[in-house]
Length: 317
Ligand SMILES: Cc1cc2nc3c(=O)[nH]c(=O)nc-3n(C[C@H](O)[C@H](O)[C@H](O)COP(=O)(O)OP(=O)(O)OC[C@H]3O[C@@H](n4cnc5c(N)ncnc54)[C@H](O)[C@@H]3O)c2cc1C
Ligand code: FES
Image (cartoon, rainbow, N blue to C red; front, side, top):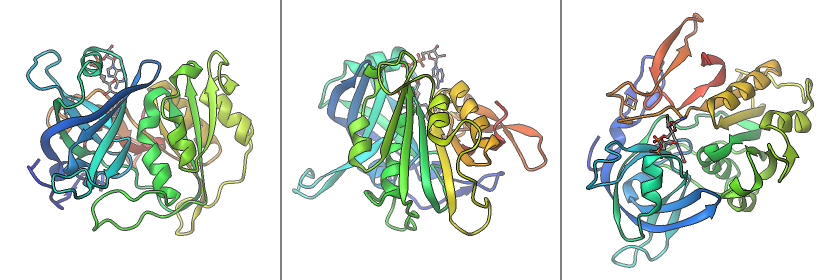
């Protein structure tokens, strides 16, 4: 980690690049902080190096300074970035990083009570982010707060936003982006207008039927694509544009179900794992997941530096 961004990329054993050493560690002033849904808050941080470098699917570790409970930082996906055209000291544009979090345990409960103007500690951007090839129809599948990892991907693929350093190659466009979002009840859909205003076609499922389809997100996928058929898959693995690809984030059982759903239809699918993390930079091994290699055997992989995004067919659920 450095105090400024770097372009060094570490090659991992899986062949996936890792951007942990390009992360910055810095104070991050809270610029905006408000409740947007039941139990759900939106946080805007002034951490320009993270905001300038982040790509869709990456995250930052956030810590509350000057307190020992909780001692450890927590990972939060960078939901989006926002440019204030005259936010800099000299009236120059300033890019902020936005996060959305669900109040859950000790960290998020304490974070909720911290006011605008106070400083947090943030390091990032971390993780591999989504590396999805050209695809005609991108389907984002979110469970609960998992939607935070997916908005920027959809916005970028529809040409509504550009993320990452200037040296990054342009991301391929998709003709269509759909979001299938499942939650326990209607009050939990925080940020849905961000999806709609980006041109993303949003479909909801709730367990209690208070919004959208009553049922799970897999029921929703069945209702949109057919329970066993759906559109025939395009050739996967060749250089042509794939017809449909799924990017998924949410609780593990939901992602496992979506992965099975995609596999039976031969749709390619990436999942962004929400493993508990302590360091975020590959040191502590708290974040391991069982990931299969080409031979079919599995090994523990650190989701903070080799993930959090993996090909769903590689995960040993
Ligand atoms: C890459 C990544 C991105 C994330 N992005 C977001 C985000 O954008 N918004 C958001 O709200 N959350 C996100 N999370 C999850 C968030 O980091 C955890 O929920 C965090 O632990 C909350 O801290 P806490 O102290 O409030 O809860 P804790 O006290 O840490 O946890 C409370 C309870 O939840 C369980 N728990 C903790 N973490 C997880 C987990 N990851 N999965 C399942 N159970 C868990 C604990 O075992 C405990 O029982 C992300 C996680 C990862 C790995
Ligand atoms: S969180 Fe420490 S190694 Fe991944």
